[in-house]
Image 1: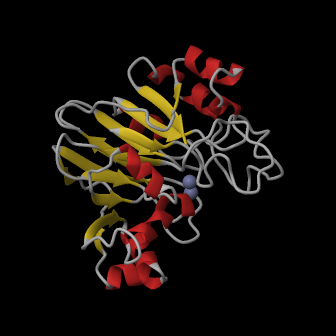
Image 2 (image 1 turned 90 degrees about the vertical axis):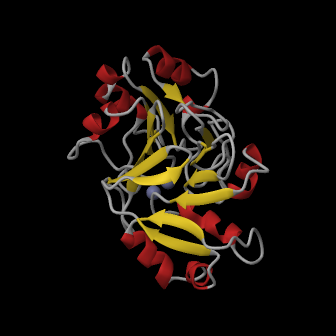
Length: 268
Ligand SMILES: [Zn+2]
Ligand SMILES: [Zn+2]
């Protein structure tokens, strides 16, 4: 498994941002890369074309989508007529996410012309993703203007991984128990502290801060490798060698970087 992108939806640097505190990153996405055969993509980010070079020349055989915010699905345009022109590429997503795609252009045409094929995903019901992998979705609280949001539990032959790039809060749902069921958890680390984001309020773009998350999950780090992803350009923990990045490591957590790999065992 490889982290293709570890940035927030707008990636780092972000268009229009005068300055980036974090090191450059593409938008959040993972790929599971078996020894042979196609790659399974988790989130189709706007940077998917460049991200694919990490796994090229392997084709992408399936896509799982967490939700309908631009950093997580807008890359689907790259599978249409003008680019990859895939044939019925399976797109696994919740029924609400698929309904959104089916009702709005240009996604509607990608489905209608069969570059993509929608595969409804029922939360809590595991599906096989090839290469000895099973995937199951968990609905999580997150701004739901168009779609709901899920995290993915990806189980390989030897290890399991949670991919949860976007969540509004850890309270009110079984976040700690969900993380504790996995060997590796790649979770929302958008902001370091509530002094971010610059010029906006955390009430408009709610995310747990890394400081908050490290307090919440301090007891889990002996058993689970917890990695913060979806790093905003303003996040100092996303700058290698910063005091904040050092503090994350000291507390037993990690900050995701593009190209970081984790072994799920077998061929994954
Ligand atoms: Zn996002
Ligand atoms: Zn989002």
